[in-house]
Length: 136
Ligand code: HEC
Image (cartoon, rainbow, N blue to C red; front, side, top):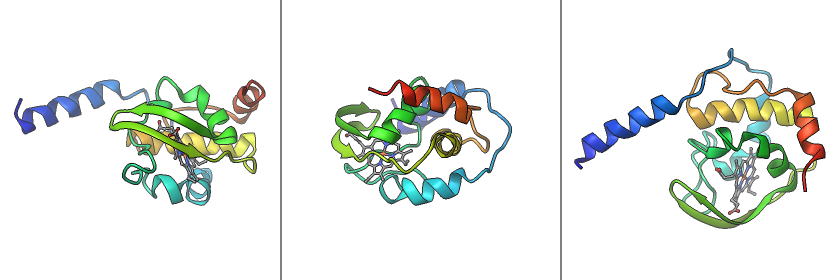
């Protein structure tokens, strides 16, 4: 397949996969992202080579969103397979962030991940608190 066709196909897939968007929110999530995540995942979620995965297009903002609070709190280690290959490194847990801050972060990072101008999740701090109680 020619590069151009492949590109068009990819754009089509991304558009089809785009979830319904929630109203725009800027409730401090960007600031939290810059403080707690961007030094590894990049200011726009672009990642860093084979070291830190890109967040843009990450499946954690689609079907795996509900796992994100525990990943943020407890970190992530071992092999993970993403679109651009496998990563086998360690993301440290973050015990400073509370449920409300994690909810804000998730709303902001969902924008980064999908390229939408508004959050693609309406997750609340109550829902995050509930998910955090169930972390292994
Ligand atoms: C010290 C660097 C570092 C920081 C800070 C960090 N991460 Fe990570 N993150 C990583 C690494 C390394 C991995 C891959 C872990 C593995 O290979 O198992 C990862 C994996 C992930 C993943 C799963 C991979 C994917 O893209 O689907 C998500 C989502 C994620 N991080 C989000 C965040 C968020 C949100 C924050 C801020 C609260 C954050 N990370 C802070 C290094 C970091």
